Image (cartoon, rainbow, N blue to C red; front, top):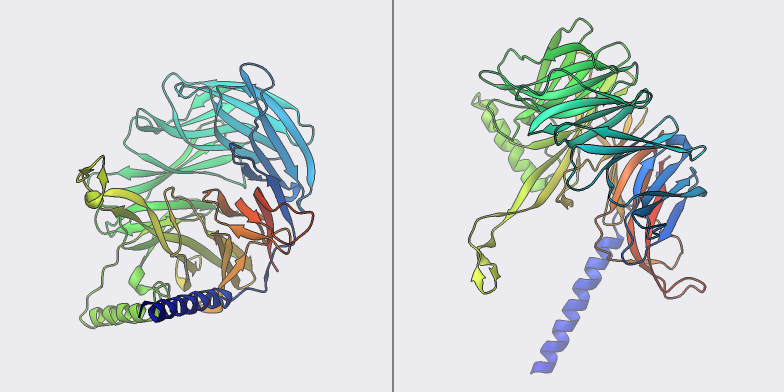
Amino acid sequence: MKTPRLILFLFLFLLCSFSSWAQRKEKPVSEVIVQPYRYEAPLEEGDDDFFVVSAKEEGVLLFREAQVRPQEGFRSWEFTLLDTTLNVKWKHLMALDINLILNGYEYIDGKLYLLYQKSQYKLYEYQFVVMDLYTRDTTQHTFKNALPLVLTEFFVKKNVAILGGTVNYRSVVMLFDFATNKQKVVPGFYNNRSELLQIKVDQYDSAFDVLVTERLANRYTLSTKTYSIQGDLLQNIILEPKNGMHLLFGSTTAFENDARLIAGTYSPKPGNYSRGIFISRINRKAEQDFTFINYADLKNFFTYMRAGRQERVKERIERRKIKGKRIRFNYRLMVHDVLKMDDTYVMLAEAYYPVYTNPSTLAYSGIANTSGLIFDGYRYTHAVLIGFNEKGEVLWDNSFEINDIKTFTLRKFVQVALDGEKTVLLYVYDDVIRSKIVMGNEVLEGKTFNPVALKFESDEVKRDGSDLNGLEAWYDNTFYAYGVQRIKNLSQSGVELNRRVFYLNKVIYK
């Protein structure tokens, strides 16, 4: 009796496996996403991951700590510049003090700016290394602060470094001039309870904006402070919506006509979860107005859900509207910069929520752990895309499901390409480029799955487990996908049977 059951079990198992394989094979592939070039660097066990920096039309710069030790007390850093066809333009080794810890980097105007912390314990002493990409000449500058500085932001403008972070848990913004080696603390931060959200370098002039949270007497809001590159406060605007809403998070974008747009999330009461999205427009006279958009008022906000659940949510919204009430939805959103597409402004935000596991059933050394919930990363649900005019009126909205991502580090996954009235949304996860093409409220091409293109026809990807992967904007409607892969090739002569590589693929929306 056991043999027939075993055969039946094996038959069902193979049938399910074939069904799963067939479903994976039938996933739609986008014909407008192409990957014409790929670069690979072999990785040995113990090799450091690469840092990847866009140099726009100059190419892509890769750098990492190398295994080579040129002399005692020093270590080598390896730099590689690829052109736009991912061919190597040059490679370079640079020796640095072994105690330096990389804390940030920035590419601008043909120069790579590297920011190193002097050691793990010296939060008050930093080292800048500036490399010219054309000559590979470098200069070094030392930055010292009287108190320990925990850095969160690093930008460069007009040969001046803009540093943001905290000192004794209080926000601070500092400048360092590479020409004079002088530093300055900008006014307006340390003595208040504001939290630094964003530093935005203005591409149209020599100013930069700092967006911070503000706690007023009865509510939370945001303020934007504009500084000259010399550190002078030019403008300080506190957002004051008349309806008393709490402004939780935002992103500021400046445009050529001196207008500034701040888009973010709001809630009727303090907390981490938002009720909807706000858009604030500030003109050159510092006048401000607001648009508040409840999630329930967007046409496509819930299309990331399965059809049945989406229908139930819409029915609940309609029932509440008939009764003159609003259904309450609470989301956490990461808001991207606002983009301009002809006369339309486009805002993108990614929704996520924290995940916790219950450790009560876990045991360590024979003792059950009942100390409480354990944080288990952030789960992403979808990206929401909203088009609005200069008056803040919503013209259309759309969404892009991204519910396959869970990560322990919050970061922006989704990239955007604008093509006339069409918008392309893309992200990479598990060696697959996901994409969707929309035009206003319409979906022109539903979610598609393009595997990351491999180097050889017989290559197969094995699970690596590395967290290094991503998709970043490069130039125009061109991106690069990067990551670490373990690849096997069983049939192609002249190719290693197994190899572990860092890869970088050029990705074009055509």
